[in-house]
Amino acid sequence: MNELKIPKRLTTALVNSMTAGVVPRVGLEYIAVGRKPEVESILRDMDNIAEGGAAFRLITGRYGSGKSFLLQMIRNYAMDRDFVVADADLSPERRLVGTKGQGLATYRELMTHLSTKTRPDGGALEAILQKWIAAIQQRIMVEADLRPDDPTLNERVELDIFAVTNEMQNLVHGFDFAKVLAAYWNGYKLGDDDRKAAALRWLRGEVPTKTEARKELGVGVIIDDDNWYDYMKLWSEFTAAIGYKGLLLFIDEGVNLYKITNSISRQSNYEKLLTMFNDTMQGKAQHLGIYMGGTPQFVEDERRGLFSYDALRSRLIDGRYGSSTLRTYTSPILKLDMLSYEEILILLQKLRDIHALHFKYEPQLKDEQLVAFMQAAVNRLGAEELLTTREVVRDFMDLLHTLHQHPEASFEQLLGELAEAQPVVGKGTDEPGDDLDDLLAEFEL
Image (cartoon, one colour):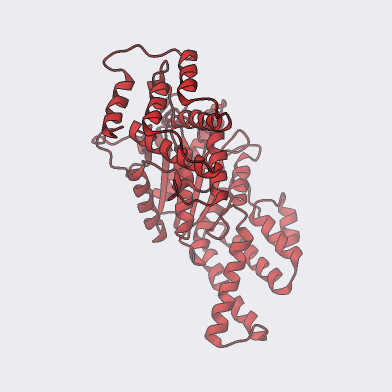
């Protein structure tokens, strides 16, 4: 207990998020267990992306199995490795394609959550541009021995900026993207806040009409439902050109595409997903990683899931030699199993100690009591099929809060009340609790 040192702001985030059953944005490294092969596989992706490659992964698992946790953990790893990251949850209002601006809404959400190591909480767009310009200014001042007020400094900086934007002009929509970046630089140089703001609004996908874009910035296009993904590819190239390793997109709640009732609209979204898959797999995108979370049903349902779209099914289906026992972790689909009993026990130990640290008391629960808690959880009717890590964690945090706030209550009393309220699985040779008995012996508890 005394050895555990975690800042108060992190224990606050961890306790609050674990109590609510949501994934914390910070401090994940203190509660991460398992998932080593999956994490190593995605870190290899990052190495390839940093070298100019691209990656596409579908991370699938049941509700509460840890998809969102893994996505968030990888997001944090990526920022530490100097990637630009952006994340968004799909919803009825945010899709990959839509007739009512749902695709553009996803782009805007991603841009709102654009983050870097120094701006991990989103809103990093302007900071990225300012850092780029400041880095150019600093380098030229050193190389040419110029003072900040030297009139030739801006000319030299402008040449460097146009060298980067000229590279962008050869890409789809690159000319207009470069023109808006140049407009931002001109606003920066002249102290014209309105021009800077107009450029930022355009880059965030917030300029509603081409007329307005032409009037404010001299460009005849806007970011919209049809082209938003092309601009994401431009962002990936641009971030790499100005010194970052690349751009990673984390798109969760893919099941919302599966839930689209209109089959034509659903197929349109799957076509866009196919385009993203092909671009990353075939080398048409550079310095770009796309990671999408969803349920197995979203992927494997042959009536309305991704496997209902033959072009995707043929690309995503497991190879002939892959199996659940001989996984390679190189497939486009990373299938998350539930955590093992041993891994869940380790997680409960971590949560017990973090809760005690946060509320400043000595941990009371012994490891054998944690195993008893797990035994009660898996003995519930159908728990072997239905139990999720999220449910275990929420129940455990509820238990810790109750014990802390009601010192007169005992662990055995609370667990007994829970057992009385819940039907249990009948005893038998395949009783889930048997595995826990083995675990108890393994931990010598």
